[in-house]
Amino acid sequence: MKINRPYIYFRFMVLVLAGILFTSCVPRERIVYFQGDLESMERMAGEYSARIQPDDLLSITIFARNQEATRIFNQEANLGMSNSVTGNRPTYLVDQEGYIEFPVLGKIKLSGMTRNEAIHYMKGLLSDEIIDPGVSITINNYRITVLGEVSNPGTFSMEHEKVSILEAIGMAGDLTINGVRENILVIREEGEQRNFHRIDLTSEEIFNSPVFYLTQNDVVYVEPNQNKINSSRDTNFMRNTSFVISIASFLTTLIVLLTR
Image 1 (cartoon, rainbow, N blue to C red):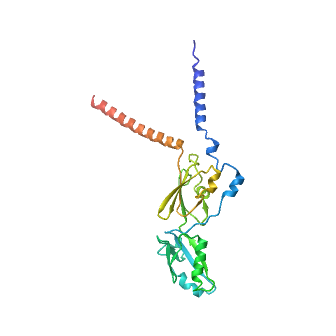
Image 2 (tube, helix red, strand yellow):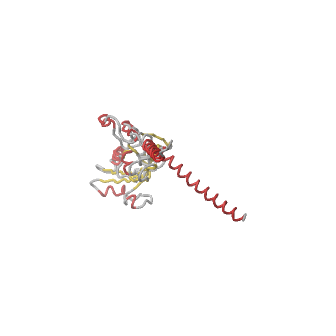
Image 3 (spheres, rainbow, N blue to C red):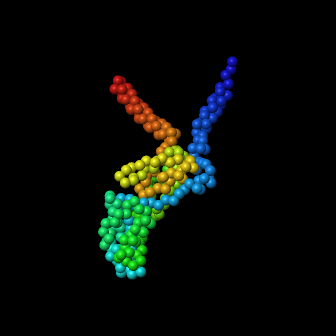
């Protein structure tokens, strides 16, 4: 019986290609974000305001109709911070107990308050010193770090205090195709405790997550999927194999030369 080798080779190649296509197809459910009822998603996202934490740098400016009365409160207090950070505005470091040292008023505890709560609180304290005082507070060190399987990992400074995990991922260039969307890790420092939260970008429940809105110094990590892990292992294996082959070839050549 004559064997039709070209036909056998053709069938073999078709099977190989079909296998590659089958294994490389990723289900839609593992890629698409926000799967579910869009109307219910609209009701999920709640209100959020960042809260002042120890080690925060606060720019605080006092103003009133009588500018002379505010001068003592707006003296330089930036603790040596560079102009690019403070913009020459009075800047105060929140200590580990949550206090700042403010001119005339002394130690004031602001940790745990939102910016608006802190403004209202300081207006009350200043009302005995200034007629109709105004207060401006900015958190200078509002930064988010995004690591792992994103296009542009790094640390990003925020210009406003309401930043969602979606915005942070967007600033990092979105997830790569190898990023695991169902198991994003958010690391958050809360007081002296480090807490770990998981969030699923493919679920409508993302908007109910306590870390949907990020706070200052949060770290977002996107882990690689199994394909990326396997690819890295294969690459390392090939490198190690090439190294071993090179050493074996060198030793073989050396033995041949020495035994002549």
